[in-house]
Length: 217
Ligand SMILES: [Zn+2]
Image 1 (cartoon, rainbow, N blue to C red):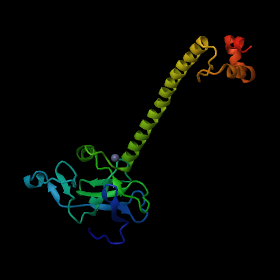
Image 2: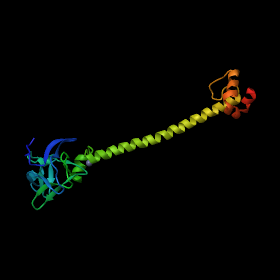
Image 3: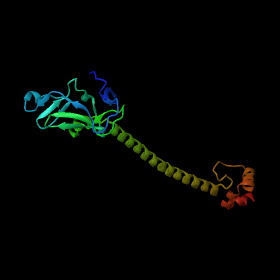
Image 4: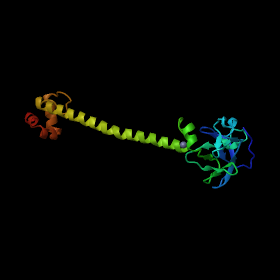
């Protein structure tokens, strides 16, 4: 790992996706944090144009920085879809600086948007792991769970309703065909027990079932 002198406001550290660059002191919005540098490749030269790696930074139609060199600490900066820095390209000078677009607090990872081409080629196929995309996925999962849960009870409710209706029908049938049996469907009760229930406690049942009342009386 390349050494970074302590006067720099960043350090290389572990990030979710491997290594990343982290602020070690407050970085004010607008500050040039670090230069993205490496050999300049000229796409008109076959040898240069043949070079392929993940750290190529295209400046314009002709020039590309090969940022894969070890000394290019800026290559540790990870992509984010909602970054706190941006790449500031000077086509005339053929330089690229990473600049803060927000105030960055110590400990915060420094990110910039790699652009749609890189995103399509390298990130989309594996799923972007930036904090913004992780949050989005977590939200989507939570929403999917919530919609599942909100669907379930209505299903259960209707099933329970149907069951209850069935049970009520059965109970009614029982009450009609076997007046001595308890209306709650608990089974056949002895005549004495039925009388006791009807006479003492089950006023409601007596009202609901005239046959029973006649028997209890
Ligand atoms: Zn993302």
